Structure formats: C-alpha cells, structure tokens
Image 1 (spheres, helix red, strand yellow):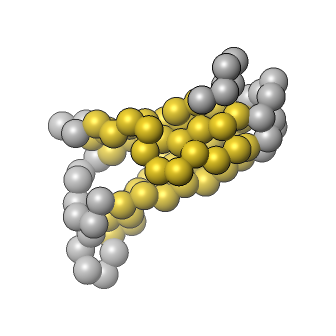
Image 2 (cartoon, rainbow, N blue to C red):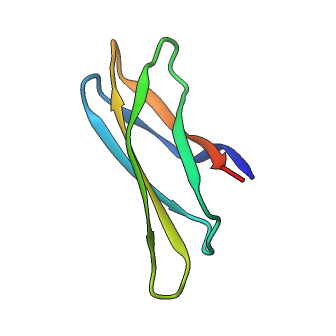
Length: 83
C-alpha cells in the first residue's frame, strides 16, 4: 500500500539532514519512504532507512534525508510497501 503527502510538512535548510519516524501500529513488512518535496527545485536524498519492532509487536519505521540544496525544502513523505 502506498502513502502520499504523509505527515505534516516541515522545512530543512540546504546541507542539513532531517530524521523522520512513522508507524501504522501494526507490521506492514518492508517499507520505503522518500521526501515529497513541495519546494520547486528542491533536492532531497534518502541517506538511511530502518525499522524497529516494538514490545507490543508493531513496527516503527525510520528514514533520514539530506537536503542537497540549493534552497530550503518544504517536504513530507511519499512511499509504500514492497509487496
């Protein structure tokens, strides 16, 4: 299942990194996420992704982005599962 325009958008300055976490309160298997850039000419790259199984069995997903510039980027998440 894909997700688009997910979570509240936020700004990140050029050259900086931003860390996101998200959960669906169950286990959705392998998931990926990428920056949903809302700023024209924004360039965000995914630098790391991972997950953690919580004590109650659900999975929390993590993703880090880097803003390659040339300007601040307003963004949230796009992504989905691999199945």
